[in-house]
Length: 187
Image 1 (cartoon, helix red, strand yellow):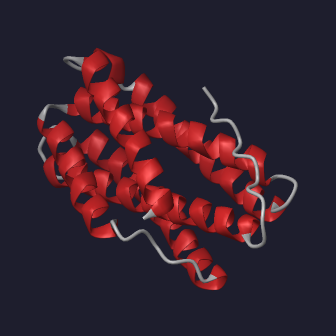
Image 2 (spheres, helix red, strand yellow):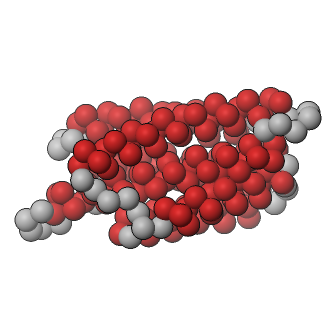
Image 3 (cartoon, helix red, strand yellow):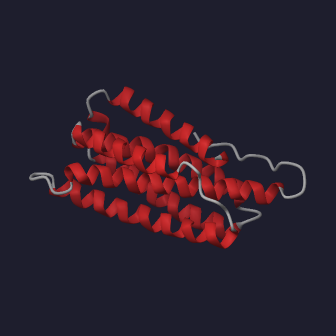
C-alpha cells in the first residue's frame, strides 16, 4: 500500500511547510532506524553463532547512517528543525531493536521487515508528491527507498515471517511506525 500524496495546502508558504514536514519526518525515521539496528547489534552483534546476522545488521545500520547524515545536511541547508521527539525515537528505536533481538534472530528480522515495509511505502508516497516540484530530492528518496526494499527483502529471506508471533509482532511494529510518522511530521 503506497501512501497517497498529500495535496498542497493553500496559502503562502504552504509548500515550504510541507517540505519541512517531509524532511523532519524522514530525518526522524532514519534516526530511529539507526538506533533499531544499534539495539539489535548490542544483543546479536558479537554473540557467538550470530556472526552472519551481526554483519548484516552492521551493513544495514551503515546504510541508515548514510541516509541520516544526508537528512542532517538537508535540515541544515533548508533551515528545518528536527523533531522535538528525537531523544524519544533514539530510545524507542534502541529498545525495539534490542527487544526483538532478545526474542531471537527471526524476530529481529521480523522487526526489520515491518519497519522497512512502512518506510518504503512512506517514501513511495513522498516520491510521488515531490517528483514535479523537487525532482532531485525525489531521486534521492528513490535511492533510499530502494535500499530499504533490499533490507526488507533480506529480512524476509532470513526468515522474518517464521518469527514466533510474527503476525502480532509485525502489526504492532507497523502501527508504531505509522504513529511515529504522523507525530514526527508535526512535532
